[in-house]
Amino acid sequence: MTFYTKTQLRPLINKDLKMDTLNRWLKRIEEWTLYDFNIGVPTDSKAFSHGQPVKRKVYDESDIKRLKKLYDLRVNENFPLPYAIHKVFLTEEHFNKWQKGEWDKKTEWEKLLREAQGVRQE
Image (cartoon, rainbow, N blue to C red):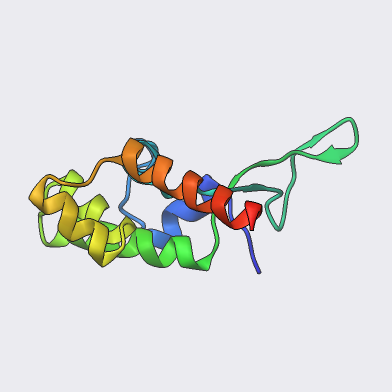
C-alpha cells in the first residue's frame, strides 16, 4: 500500500485544489465525523529525525477516492461543505440520521467505545 503526504495528495485529488482548502477539509472531516486518517511514514519519506523516518498523517488510495468524491460534491455539484463531508465520510445509516438531526459525533463515539469494551470482556 502506498502512503502519501498532504503535499502529494493535493494534485491527486485535483490540480486546481488549493492547499488551504485541502487543509480546511481535512480538519473538518476529523472534527465532524468519526473518520481518522492514518499516522505513519509516507512511502517515499524524505523527512528524518535522529536517523529515523518521521511519522505524520498519511493518506492511502481509499482516502484519495473519498476526497475526490468530496471535491466533486463540493466544487462541481456545489453542495455545502457539511453536507458533502457527511455524505462521503459517514455510513449511509449515519448520514440519514445526520440529515434528520439525530446523529451526534460524541454519542456515536461513546457507543463505539462501549461496543469495543463489550467485545473485549467476552
